[in-house]
Structure formats: C-alpha cells, structure tokens
Image (cartoon, rainbow, N blue to C red; front, side, top):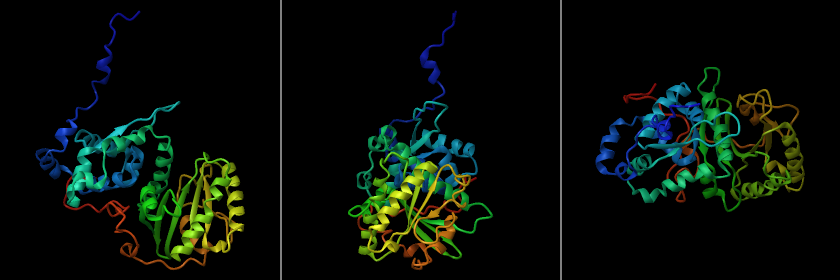
Length: 341
C-alpha cells in the first residue's frame, strides 16, 4: 500500500523553464540572445528551416562529436526558444527527441536576411504540425539518408563530401510541376561529382507499381531540362526492393530512351545499410552485375555529363521561387566563436 503518493505535477519538475513566445521575439531579448549563438547554432537554424525536423542523433551526425554533446547544446537552445522539441509515441522502447525550429530561432533567421518573420513563411503551429503528421517517419527517414552521408564524410578514410542537399519542399518549388522527389543531393569525389534525386520508399505505396509510375515524370523532367539526373530508391526490406525493381524495370521499358533516367536501388536489410558509402546501390539500367558504393555509380552510367566543380555553379540555388538560398550541408568550420566542440 502506498502511503506517500507523489503528486502528479512533481513528475514534471525537471522540465526546463522557458520564456513566453511573446517575450522571445522582442528586440531586447534578441539583442541578448545574438551574442550567445555560435556559428554552428546559426547554421543549425537554417538547416531546421530547410528540412523541418531532425532527431537528436541526426543533429549529432550533422555537427557534433557525440549525441551527449549535442543534447547539452540542444537543451540550452530549447530553453532560449531557438528550437522546440517533441517525443513521438512508439510501441516499444523510447523514441529519440525530435527538434524543430522555434520562434526565436526563426526570428533570428529573418533578421539575418533583413526581412520580417512573416516573409519567410514561418509559423510555430505549422512547424509543430509535423509532430502529428503521418509523414513524420518519412521525413525523418529521408533526412537520415543525408545526415549519415555527412557523418561519414567526416571520417578520415573518406575522400568526398556532400556538396548540396535540397529538401522535399525545395524540390517541389523547383520541379513540382513535373515531379516531386523526396530530396536532391550532390556528392563530390576526386573522380567527379554525382547528383541524384532520392525516392525514400517505406513500403506504404502499394502496389510497388506506384513507385514505377514516377519514372515517366523523371524522363519528362530530363527532356525539359536536357539534364540527366539519376534516381536513387531506398526501400526498407530486400523483398520490397525486389518488387520495386520489377515495377521500375517495367516502367523503364516503356520509355523512349531509358538512359535518360538512370536508376539504382538499395534496402535497409543489407549488411552495409548502416554505411551510406558501402556497397549498397544496385543499378537497374547499365552494368548491374553487383552492388556499388555511392561514389562508384558514376562508372555504372557513363552517359552522365560532367558536373561543375564548385557549388556556386549549381543552378537554382538563388532562384526567384526560393524563400531562402539552401544552406550548405557541411557544418561551417569553427571560427573565433565559442562553444564549438
């Protein structure tokens, strides 16, 4: 028998106190907040604005040496209302904390761009709506493909890095009248650069033919732009990958020129699934005898044109239909600011 029951409210006593939303956008508060934000903090603000939501583990992959180090800084940013957070329900275990952009962080971003907050299209209710969206797992999974690439590029045995990373929303603004990929990426190596569209398939689009039906739209985009861009398809299981490859093969056979849509697939059950640069990608058209790492896909599609060597040559980075230019995927180098590592 419990004789000394703990009042329910005391269970939340460890929750950090935060200022109100109204106080977080005042000039006085922003003036006190500005010198406390490091270059990395401001870069993270732009990444959250572009890609909506990251888990604590993904943020650590982006710019911190460990999850613990990331959590310490994220807690401070949460208290300052630079970021907000939520923890979705899972049936087993505990879900990681998910972070979005909060009102103070969005206001700092707008002030850096010299515009009002409404001009960048930010609303806290809209940002938090991802927590209740059925597309949360899809958004987190898509972002995880790119954050793992960034984390891998920081290791000594990798000679390459992610040059560009566009979100689904930015891809929709640029290509939405034809096709809407889940993301766009560009990887640099000494041998050349590979750009691609990502289709992140969680197995919810049934039948698999719905994935194959997207290829004619990618072929139309290649025809309209005269640019051949590979399509990489991520699937959760080997069985799902097999079904998707069959549907993609049927769709390619109906195209006038299948070479305009190079396709490669992978799945999350492979031994190399945790290594985004491992032998994971299996080309669908071309010499598809074996799986290849991401950087070796260039040799699978010799018809791909040479890409510009610098990020400034990437078209559309400052297009008129963009709210803000896309942030550089790689975390900026530490300067004179404090609190980097």
